[in-house]
Length: 256
Image (cartoon, rainbow, N blue to C red; front, top):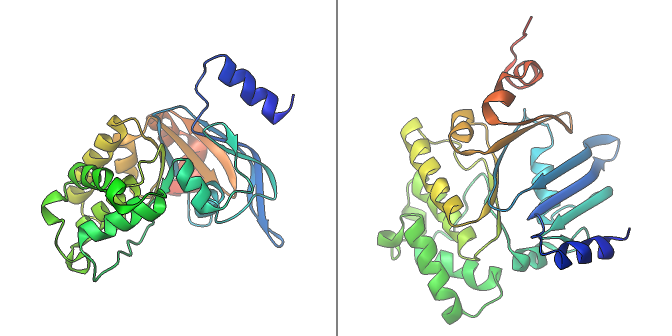
């Protein structure tokens, strides 16, 4: 059956296409195999946590989903549409948004101006049409009171909030979070988890790469673990954390 036929059948049956599907995705850089045979499907509204040691292929996975890289083989679908060859801006306008591990706002612009740039250029709208979504993003992330503040003066937690607000301003259906809790105190990470729960409650599907394990355990519906470019475990968060192979590979614990 062709891709077009399978998509037509799903649409005709009234079944919503998964926000994200990866089928047998492979990626190598020269002789280095970074991802090997990745199969992954997300349900609408799901929050999927991604764990893995450094060098496991997590960033490459996000780059393939976002369009910064293309798979050597396999398929990537967003909202049921194959996007292997689409550039990042086209994927953004289909409903994909991403945050980055290190927030880099436009330091000399205000918080609102930062969000407006994302809400207009990212979503392909003029500024007046982008204003409502920008205001909602600021309210949801707790930054409405700081809208006129210079972005470069924000503390780390609020920079993380701004990074999230910029992504939300494009009104995504699928949101990729890249180690957004990194560098935060335990109290700040807990506040961020509550914020992400609020985002998820709006119906956004989320994929969250994180090293702060307790943050993922508090928020994720499902965990997957990458190691050596392969998925070595996936399932309910607590069950995955107790998996002997995950404990060995990710936590360095030998389970006898």
